Picture 1 (cartoon, rainbow, N blue to C red):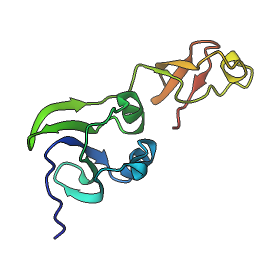
Picture 2: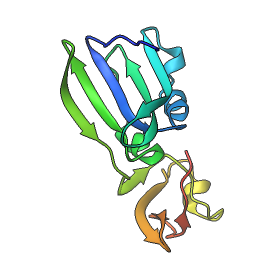
Picture 3: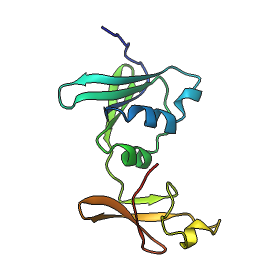
Picture 4: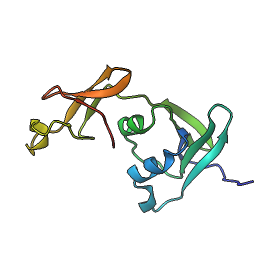
Length: 143
């Protein structure tokens, strides 16, 4: 049995859908960290069968919007003195700014360097998409 010690002060990103932990690890640039970080993949879960977990032995700024885009089911636990002091649930963000590009090649956000792409959540045909605030084109996100 693999044993990973608890952390005294830091962050635990839990309930990550199996297979998405590596993407979050890469987006947070945790490979460059100079403090202990653990990525657990395919951990048994009673609710989901399998899950990924990231333990960070340090306090860092997390972009909850980005985490919600990758996996809206995960939780972020803030740990102090070996105890969870705050548990945050992420969700699919209603608004996104500067995280992906509009699929319309003529959209001003794709060629004006002073315009940051902005999107609002729009559900269409059972799919989650975002509507560009500038040209109103529906865009599937991928970060």
